[in-house]
Amino acid sequence: MVQLMSLNSPITLLLPITLTCICFIISVGDPARFIDWDWLWLLFHSISPYFWAAMGVAFAIGLSVLGAAWGIFITGSSLVGAAVRVPRITSKNLISVIFCEAVAIYGVVVAIILQTKIEFVPPLSDGSYSSAAMFSGYSIFGSGLTCGFANLVCGMCVGIVGSSAALSDAQNAALFVKILVVEIFGSALGLFGVIIAIVMTGGVDWGATNG
Amino acid sequence: MTWGMEMLTFNIKDGYLEALVRGHKAGLLSVADYNNLSQCETLDDIKLNLTASDYGPYLANEPSPLHTTTIVEKCTQKLVDDWNKMRCQADETLGRFMDYCTYGHMIDNVVLIVTGTLHERDVQELLDKCHPLGVFDSIATLAVAQNMRELYRLVLVDTPLAPYFSENLTHEDLDEMNIETDRRALNITLNSIGTELSRDDRKKLYSNFGLLYPHGHNELSMAEDFDQIRAAMEKIPVYASIFNKLGFGESQMLDKLLYDEEVRRCVLTYEQQFHYGVFYAYMKLREQEIRNIMWISECVAQDQKARISDGIVFTF
Image (cartoon, rainbow over the protein chains, first blue to last red):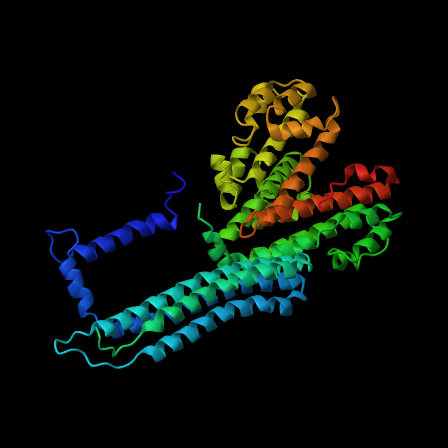
């Protein structure tokens, strides 16, 4: 347990900070209540759904590119080092880099799809937006987050496996195909996020009148 | 404990070098290479056999009457070149780790120079005998010191070893270090049987960590002959299996068995990615390989080919 809570572990640092932020945000309205629901309602009601939609697009492409870049440098640094002794591995192992790159492409595709879903609707007379518009904003935000995080961890996963692939290919060429299978399964993880992201935006209709 | 985070962050600084050291490790001689070497009739044959290996370029321009010392020197040069190239590329943390790895040689060199100087040997001759991995800039000035205190005050404070000589402290917590310290303790005991070294003096020479510390050390310091050493060592499971392979009274095979165990553990470090152990293991494996080549060359040079297989510790 002492090991688990050691100072250099990320949870020990991040958990108190996150808890403090959350407690601050939900109790900042009326100090008499731990969670001020009215204030929260006002808060989320007043934020434009276009903000959420734009954040969704930003997360979709931003986190995907972060994952892809992370994977590429993990793979790339090992690949370059291993290729010093065994130059034959370079062109074969470029496929690991391409798998990582595909993660960024998923992000671009989803970001473009999300972007095309955003339409203009005028606000209601009190300056707020209809439920349909709010729903559309949150849908796009959620689908952007889904795609972004799925692709972030997918990129890391493919990068680590790709790094191992480069090192093991350098030692024994027969291992390459076997590790490539593992890598393909890793890169499929990002696709799951893309599928769910697209499904999530299926109901988006900014101008629906029933809400 | 970093929950696998080192997988995500290790390659930022050390990915290239880790791959590089694994590449160097792939150049170590295999069992087939050793078999070919064992068939050699002359030292020139050995040179010819090593041409295809990593040592090729280092031995290529050596004139024909070869000596064992030349071969070993050139092979060591290969290790030193690899090591220095990697050391130049290493970032701060890895660089410090690699420095720690060479401190063993550095200490040996210091001891060599100091004892040599006290016996009034030529400094240049001593410097030639130093292990090149343990050479540091001011090593030649060690010779000016006349006693230990002066040595520390004048010379060692400026060397990387200063904190160790002042506090006798070490931070390494590697498992390999345990076997290393235990082996040193064992060697001290073995070599001191039959000398006037008293029990307390002997105990002072042991390190203060390792699997044997502290109870094993007490028993070792009391040991008067090989069987008592064996009784002390067999209480540790790792060593029990090693001593089981030895018949009673065969102390000369012990060195080889301990080397076997070390090589086995060094090879195991390559099973896991994203850690520094591979650098230490590479140095140890390469040194073992050079010892093997030295043994083969000596056997060939002295026409003792039947004994070649006794001294080789196979790495792969």
